[in-house]
Image (cartoon, rainbow, N blue to C red; front, top):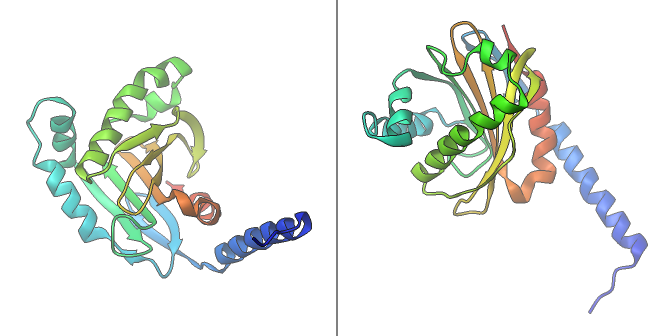
Length: 214
């Protein structure tokens, strides 16, 4: 058995962190105007997943009119537009950035402006149901969801939470931001492999900081 000294272990840790930071800074972000007043910068080399996401939405829309959360989600798909869907690769288990717009808004600007701990607590079961239904459609299982909180995102007051779900290649972390304008509810979804979190979080932070909603 080879033993690694404390100094060597620390050096290795620093090297790994430095490599992750370097990989992040080397990723070039391309500014995009994706319509409906939304501006975002995404990795230049990432591929379009628009067809994949639209296929998923059509599958969910087939549940329209059914009882329960599946029917509610299916009904809302009819008024949803996919503004952006890009991924590191062309499959749903790779890192992904997705932006959708719901018209008319399902969560309003007034609701977000007046959000309190109590109202967010009341909203939590509904959001968890949506995430569980989304995971089910992908053949995944929802593992955990963080409490929803209010943040500033894209220059607007927003709601955010983070969840973890299974996939055939390991657990996926999914971070979501909800922003409302007078005419729409915008949902920003950022997904990455839990095992790659140390490298992916800095990159996604740069993407998040690039967002602007007019």
